[in-house]
Image (cartoon, rainbow, N blue to C red; front, side, top):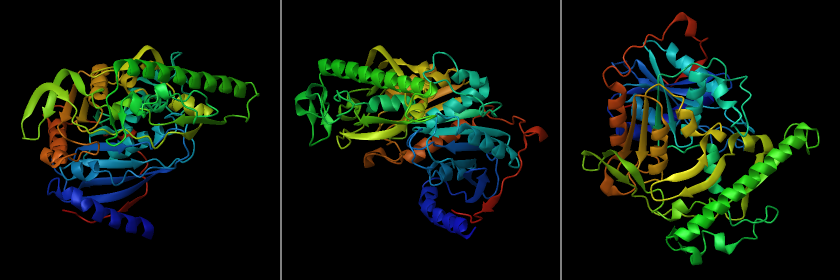
Length: 465
């Protein structure tokens, strides 16, 4: 208990600066134990008109299948930003360590968090919040909650979910996405290095497919590049081909495991040589602008409907060449594998040739099943302009918005001083969306049937300004 209180005291000091940049309303923190998981509730010390809305924020970690342990979400800026504006936010940490097979081991904790949030006095509306790779997680959860585990069990899935732990999950009343990936599996696809031609010897590379070679357009001094269309076509075709080989190998090894002919009884290690092989990070012309006009929150305080262009700097890094990640066969197939088609390619305003339904954690596929209101906010100093537009286009909700924040980096802060207080612009707009009349008016969700058993709590109890 003393360690928990000490942690909360330190956390309070860390977050004070974030709160001071938001609003002046004082907030308090409460540590909440939810089975093997834990959460930090941040809320205004005096409930106000926005306190009937609670937001559950969660982030799964670096990988679905690596043994990396839990990730600490307690210091995420969304907590103080929204609590200081009058909302309640529950920052959820997943307590499950060790290899994971898809999102099935994570989803039940999100359900517990939603039930707990609904139990708070005065709360009648609960939303999910996913940032970055947390976006695919909350999209998966809400799709399953609204439509049942069958959505991840179809024959189109590379690794259908078991679904035993995904029944009767409580639904959220809305979903917020900020600067999100299109899926764990799609992220790994873009890490697959096509210059690797021999899985047993990943340092033996094909220079004609190496995006970090000067001959192919890479500038090591700037970490930037200008790649030719012919190189990009060959690169993405080879990336898709190597991705297909990895999936085929993993499926063959899974078949052997099921037949009792594998190295181990139920699962086994599966190594993948990766190199963060993303031309989009070096060549800032790739996926750099939207196809349609969308709302842009500009640095001068005005808003405009326009084609939105990225202002990100080059981010190409070759430090991971020749390194590998250790997955498991099941973990790779369930969480890191997605199929491509012959049209797989990235251009200035598009990503094509991805078989989105083939992966259970595909965000575009999952948002097709979500009917509650959806807000997508994208930061123009990162590389999600096109991915977030793809997510918006797939979203089935009749109440959906896509908004871009000029000059904001991935963590909401400005990438250059001239872009001003991008953090404030982001959360001020989110506040307006959440509090808009009739969008989340009293929903009457609090009933005796959905009140969970009260978990143990430790109250930080210290108002912060």
